[in-house]
Length: 212
Image 1: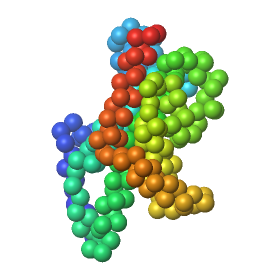
Image 2: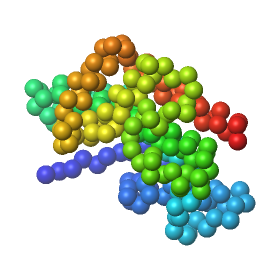
Image 3: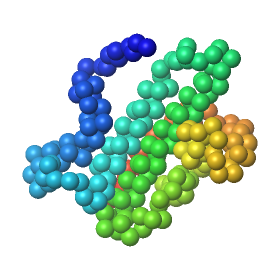
Image 4: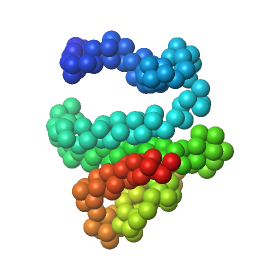
């Protein structure tokens, strides 16, 4: 069986050579930037929990995840490798994956903002309480969220928790899909609503920065 050689965009040559290693370099690259800025962080040293809780890394990853979601949604797929009768299902699953990425980007951003609010040491104390995907609970400190906004966050939580990853939750949550349909219909949620809320929540990081 022949495998086609993928051509990546310019700048991804190192990824093509070593995808696992290249994709694990975020902390090291951040440490180099810190060192150049005059902070004493050794890029060659193993990452510590304290370093990895730096909110810059969290907000950067949230942005990267958001960009990945955008790239997925803006790329048309034909699903040619799937039987014709399955392609409609594949399309919905593809969009579910995109919503999972949107949800994850918000989860990471919200947790990054919690770190900013609490400080790294303070966050370490409450970290166990944030080890979940319930976006509507994580976002309680974001001002002026409407019922529709919370409905969107609950819906995105559905895709982050399982619907963007598996066809079956495997945990007795099959009825959750019906609840998402109900939320979508009740609040008339559009893609524009989802991305507008996502942008608004992410912009709140700037407000928190100004308050520090």
